[in-house]
Length: 356
Image (tube, rainbow, N blue to C red; front, side, top):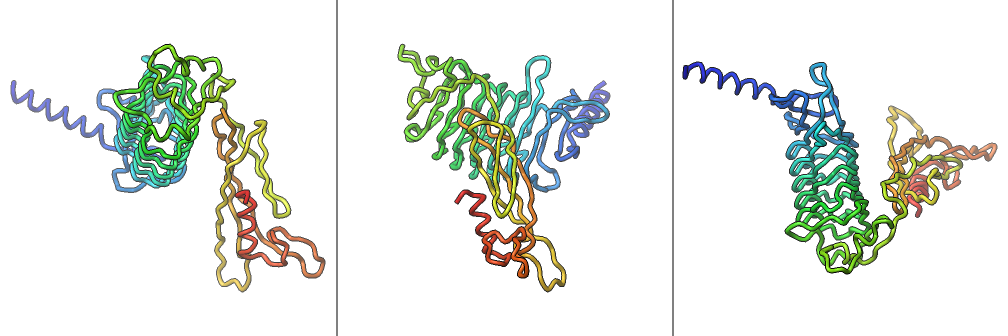
């Protein structure tokens, strides 16, 4: 009998080990729980490779012919990688549980600039985005009801945070935003203010430069003087009332380029634009002449107070040609109109796009 039990134990261990072996599906590596093959966990690349670029975490993934819910982003799954931005989608199960972002899942991602957590994600664990040096904006969706200790600690470039309605009257972990010295705008959409856990959410030195944005309909639930404990929300340097009680998003901007000028438009009235330009050089083999700035890529996001940043618009433009010596006609590329296409055009075009 003991031998049979021992063999059964070995078989069970073998099954678990097999089930936990990472599998590459699409852009990510996953493991699947041996007790429930419909629940997937995203894990670090087992081969030591690094995730990079702009990532979209899916809500579901197909495995062995069936749809599996992505339930967890594992511990240190993306830690220290060169990702630029991440959008995390989720899906609630029948019990209302959604995707959980694990401990240190994105810590030390120094190239990461923006995080968007959509509906269907319910928790953010300890140190999840700890020490992301260049992270500037975070959107925490309407289903997240738990933000763990030090979740966004020591993100010195972080300027804007949107916090969804499920955090209403929920606790934010200790030191969640300590060390975010440039945090300027904090948007809360819950009916009631989140509660402070056993330690400070912010440092006292942060309040003077921060603005709290809350829906006008819930304003008194954050700013009241009846003796209830609403620290830290009553200590912000300023408080603004928003007309909307749900997160709206700016429309994706449109990009146009003509006669050396780049311009942006957006269907969201009053939106402004955050833009970057990147040069992408072509390869010219054995060429005696070629345009110095061959072509460039423009990326732009529309922003507006009380709105989520838009989706990023991206477009590439060729820079080839000069002013024709015979006709005097301008040919696209000679931005400063000096008859040459060279680094001076590159500099001027960059300044135009960056609003300098």
